[in-house]
Length: 269
Length: 320
View 1 (tube, rainbow over the protein chains, first blue to last red):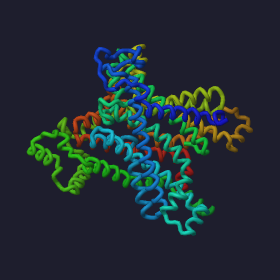
View 2: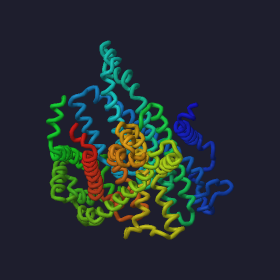
View 3: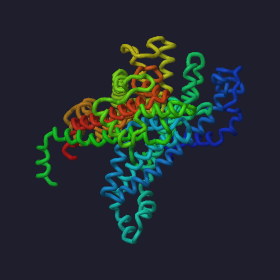
């Protein structure tokens, strides 16, 4: 029944679930070492033992895609969780505090948002140097603002509802008010935004790794696989196809899921 | 508020709205500039050590630090930075030994060209798709157009670029592979950059058209005898355009940063490639200049969107 009414939710959910399973079970599914170099197999096409072929150093592409899934999905989920937590607390607190605090917080958000997309992340990654933790910090530093703005807006409208009034009359402190009564009311739109955000982060992580500012080689990430495969695009296009399709499919999954959730919660993007 | 308030406000000149928007820009621009400065100067890690390497002689480190003015107190560096900025002086590039402002001025037109071409490609793709889909929601054209759109959002330009290069440059030989030149050099990078935006715009336009097609004025237009397509284009489109323009402003940043990756893929001699090269060379004055120019361009684009928005929907400048 749900599949009929909301195919995006089902299809997107299935892709994201499959992706999560692959990321969790990766090493069990394929026991080939993603870092094992075998120069005699350099640029080998798909064949027995190496279903997706090998890269320029003869490393198994399937094993690297599976290992890369952990990086891409891991970074994406950790950054979404981090941004969501910071954004919800900052945005909620700003809305509850009101007045000058609210003004100051929202001006800060405006200024961070005035930086286009991943430019701030690029600048931060450039200064922090490439690395997984630095990548998470760089992406999280821009991520929280969108959630803060969303939560603030929603809390401002929820704040006047009678049940919140009632809770306040019963003597609930601001912290309890925020976590017990206000944030659950924002959960729907937050879930939608977080899902689209997770898809965007997969692309952002790939872009940063592609630019040499994300996951440093030899550790595989879909972004740095695309980057290193680009040099061999003439002779061995499968080096770029595999990570390209992996990124595309994951983003598609998150976008469909986001669409489905938005439909479910009666909101559009 | 009431009617009186409305009438009084309507006399407010449009100019005043523009001025208000422009003055609101000043603190944001100053914030962007300050944040860029803070990024380079406050984030842990010593840029001088990063530039010279861990084994540099302390005397060399000291000399470069002095040359860059990094041994002065932070507030004096900040004041000097703002003073230089006001005079169009962004310092000197360490790796190229040339003024940062000149390097940026040389490369900036290429990036603007790419961004405008990407935007044009996005609009040229999005409007027919969105119109076809929105004219008959749920129909086969809608399914096709929206399927194409969701594909466009999902294929990352990191991959689309190389893919287009394989097909159109290598296999078919129709278009040049890399570099900047005439229109033929522009097509593939513009498509790469514009594809995702085209998909997002088409979806938004469709959604927006579906919503306005239920409006009373659309029923009136149809009752007047206009055919469905004519009513949609003559009356629906303009009203459906406001959310699309808002989205354009929001996505302008994606266009700018997308241009960084696109420039790398197609060896396009723009600001993005200059910035990435500067990052790899640890050329901090140049990185700082590039980041700031990118960010200020984004702020300017957002302002332009707001103004365009008010031109399409006069209610905006009255209500704020």
